[in-house]
Image (tube, rainbow over all chains, first blue to last red; front, side, top):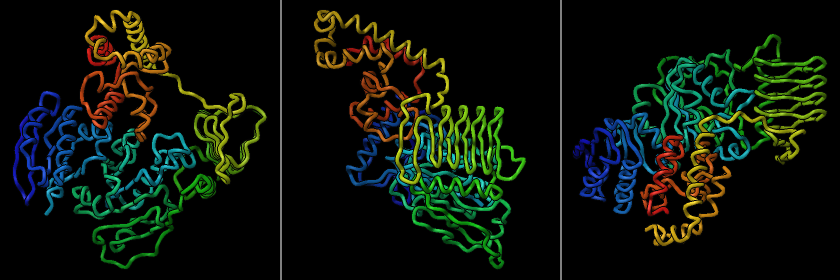
Amino acid sequence: MNIVETARNGATVISLEGILNAAAAPQLKAHLENSDPASPTVIDLTNVEFIDSSGLGALVGFLRKKKTGSGSLKLANLNNRVKRVFEITQAYSLFDVYDDLEAAIGK
Amino acid sequence: MKSLFIVRKSEHAWICRQFSAEHPLLVTLCNKPFIEFLLDFAILAGADAIRIVSDGQTAPIEAYCGNGSRWGIDISYAHMRPEDDRERIMEKNSRFCSEDRVLIIEGVLFIEHDKHADYRSWLSALPEGGIVDIGSGSLSISGEPTKDMAVPFRPLISIPAIECVNDYFSLSAATLGAGTRYILPGYCNEPDCFIGRNVVIQKGAEIRKPVMIGNNVQIMTGAVIGPATIIGSNVIVDRESTVKGSILLDNTFIGEQLEVDRKIGEGNRLTDPASGATLMMEDPHLMSAIHQPADASGLLRQLVHSLAATALVLLLALPWLALRMLPAGRSNRNIIIERYPLLFRVIRGSMRLIGSRGKDRKNSETPDMHIRQAKPSVFGYAEAEQWPETDSDALIVDHYYTRHASPLKDIGLAIKALINPKTF
């Protein structure tokens, strides 16, 4: 899985590419561990083809860390397959999900 | 123009309790789901793309509406959080809402309209802002008017409050009475009479207008249907029964010589709309639900779970082997003692071996029918996989498995359960 981190408008944008499954989740977790828990973060899922419960667990863990540190986490551009996993697990009630990366980052 | 439907599950909680439909918007009014009336109105208003945003499950709606090709429009789906207000929802859907006028239908189940009226021109000229607001629902429009012209005469448009079962009952009668204003299902050879497909009306049965009858309905000899009656699909009204001023929802059997007057019947449940009182009929000869046949994969899954549970019962019946020889036995004696009796329920078919734990399902308020209707299990999926450890995360993966389970996956997990030292 490719993970690219950039800073835009005071927010950290983490762009993921590939499949977010049990094999990729530790890599994502390791990357997110270094993130500042107080900073606003947007995860761009445009190029995530698939996510399973392990990947979702990594995102939920990161969200928990953000809430503890008074930061914020938004997700942007979920494709239908990823949306379906969020739907089934009701994880949508935990995350702020945007259909546009720019809107998630904020002007 | 585009249209945004905002559906909050808290506003329609009473509908989920009253009706067995998978989603509040799939509850039928005159044999047509609420969502279709909203789609009809949005299409009459000129919408070519519709997004349904909800803080609950959208899967049942998606399964019914698909991508909207049936109506010649694009339908997409999105989620929001319960605390999101309209501005926040617009922001979260900014890609959908940008560069176009958006008709926002919020918290509304039904909009009274007239299929002959010209809503397109009226809405095109209408300035940005609210149109109708009744507290429990509102209709508004965003974006600049597309036409620089005077606002034409306002066509028929109103939002009736549907806050209890009596509102639903009254609205059904009113909609049937004003059938020419709406697109209603069924053949309509004469006014106020809508008949569906595969309807058998036996000799001596009497049909009194206004009436609507769904698909696959049998009305036996001597039965009287109507006036002001709506019969759903897959319904049988046995001989010499009378159904007047009532609504029989899908999959209902009405026994012989029964009189149903100003009631709502669904399965074996009879509701008096005026008082809201509900009567569950225990005698299947009076009134009962017509069940759909079970699918083969369900039987296969049941077999897999029963066989695995039998193997476990035999294995764990030897305390020496279970509690001393197996490493799991030494560390998890309490689990084995607590759950051992439950294995017999798996063999009987009232529980699953692995799936979603009973306590988690009880705490879950999911409207997802797959999860609500799934049998409770002895061991959670997360527990069998030994991941994750926290309750909320475990619930997520349990739900994931409940929706994705198949006989093949069950076999794999049953084998895993037999050798999993932590679980057993």
